[in-house]
Length: 293
Length: 217
Ligand SMILES: Nc1ncnc2c1ncn2[C@@H]1O[C@H](COP(=O)(O)OP(=O)(O)O)[C@@H](O)[C@H]1O
Ligand SMILES: [Mg+2]
Image (cartoon, rainbow over all chains, first blue to last red; front, side, top):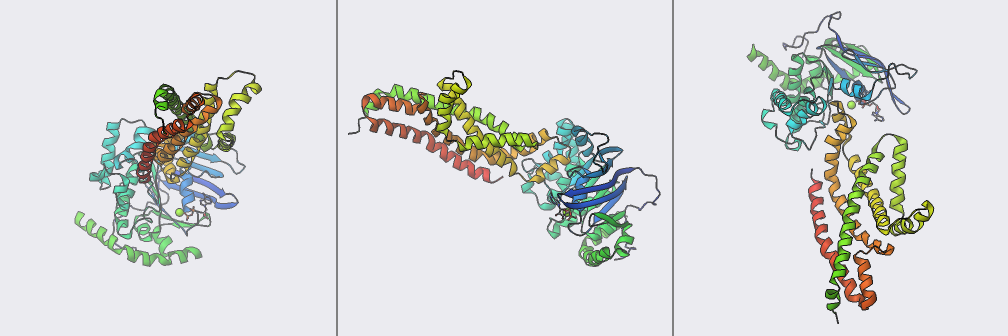
């Protein structure tokens, strides 16, 4: 597969485009005990941009993603979401200014997160999972939230499954409910942590298709994934995280086909294998594009 | 040989004792649940001094024999604190605090058995600590907690017999009183045993069933 693969994708904007940053991470440092996991990560994400985060296992991808909504609290750095600081602590450890817990909760709901293990609420039906945030956090009426939840579930191809409990759904269906649940808060940016790596291979495609649709609809996304074929087709930018720092980043063609960093080179060695595995999925999309056109 | 008339002619006293036993079982379980909820949540907080207070409470009551606690509260505490305490209050406080420490442990273990991913997911959609607890964590934890709660409550009913040692007229106290003037301990204590079995065997079987149901969520 080459860069000329005739797939529609979100156009890569010029580097100096005028879209606002939805996400600004500045010198994020995070340690667990003595172990420095993130060593000053900078990352800006523009509105509508799809950023794919790659890196070896243990390089800090999950940690970085969890810092964005403060599931992990960094030791220092700043995080600005849609113009508001959710975290701002300089290297000396002084907070400027203090941000209250309720502010943190409010700002963090401007991000939506999708987890590797889905983490659906098992005691609630699919539709109740999706309604939970709007009703409890945003105080929407149940009728209103239900209508929106149904719309989102239908968007995810789960219109008939709203009344089912998570245990009655396949992994791929559960993950799509999880995407709908995150989308229900109308987030400014969606965060995905290896959303397909807990799935049986035959269920990967359905979740990826849902994510492709999301990207096409203009959603801002930060995605951790090992599916490099997906990264190649959907990402505006690929960021390679290595030992807690951004080691290389750029357009997918650049990073995945012409890597410079030695460890990135060996990492993308798996790329062609991965692309082969994804061929059926990609071909299905090509056909879809063709019938649409 | 077995003289049932001893039981029938003193049925009124046994009945009074049984009501006292049931009364203490119910009120100390209710108070214990409140204590257990408070102490359990304290132990689950992230504020170290609070956690420590909760741990001290739990270890204190779990490691002191209940009988010693009851005797101490009734006979020794009034002298230290220079106040009067009725046997009913002593029994109520002792039994409630005691079972509360076990309930607290059940709550703590139940909450900690919930996948941390649930807290992550609830937090990520912007829920506050209390919203997470109320809506996501406790409802799941309670289902797992029902069997151990039922088991501990059954033990609690049996433990109320210790009230007789501080002269609260419970079922066992009435039995020893009846046998003191009828000289028929065999019939009386057999009757007490049978009454407990009749009350508790069905409850134990129910809690077994709950265990099966609670296991599969
Ligand atoms: N809660 C934690 N406590 C201690 N160490 C952790 C914790 N979470 C992650 N780590 C460590 O941080 C490093 C980065 O982990 P992670 O962010 O999960 O990497 P990735 O997602 O890229 O595989 C690993 O070495 C991991 O062991
Ligand atoms: Mg990870």
